[in-house]
Length: 346
Image: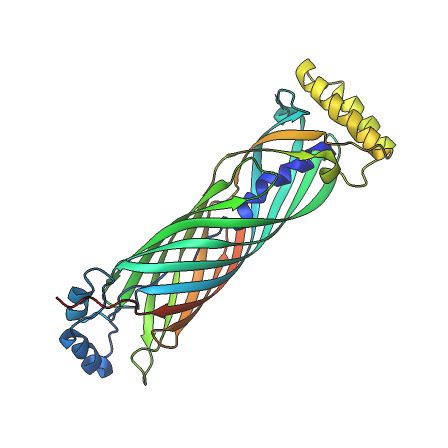
């Protein structure tokens, strides 16, 4: 039933609730050719205000990243979404549950997002950041009954959020645990809806043989995403069903509506009649369909594999992909860092 094309509205929230890149934190590269370099760090009087405890970490021989930075990120993701329940209303009427009377097939959300992530190393092992950006999303929905059809919808959205990364090392292996919450802001949704993202990475840094500031890091890990389950909003009929109008479809929908309980039947008939008028070229005006959807990511976990090339302490290029599960991802990140402010002399 084409009325339920509105289901895609909840799914676009997935589009910008993406995971963000991370920082590896303080490094101790296990290579004897850089022994003099790390010894010099121990002798240096660390001059910068951040990160806190930076002086102690430097004295211990850790090579600290510059505290201030900004990442410029391109991200694409494709994943399957499960719709658990659907409630609809029309023109301000009380919403009714139609979950038992419709059946969805696979629902796929595909995202392309562009974000900027300013960040600060507050401690040698703790990075905090903000997320600002936007992008586009395509949602492909398959309805199996009461009528069969497939539809694809495209939207733009804004994104904002915040997060933090904890890092540490055991011998030559480092660990990074990243968590963030991200909000997608879309006009047809009542209010921005959050997505929570958590990921853990285990990796190793391979130093350059010529420059102690240059290295290549590789890692593997796992990524988890959860969404706010319920999504509420409304949308004009003219935006959901452009060009709609088929006598056979309307007839099938009317037959289906006759089988519904009284409350569901009243709302379904109102919407079907309005669709019939719209298909005949009658302007639907400002009539809207209200909806409340309960949905979830079909497979919340998947594996991630990535690498970063650090040209120097100012510039890094990072790439990561997500594999397995029912989600695939790709991220490309250019990170620029600077040392920040020096401590005041006492």
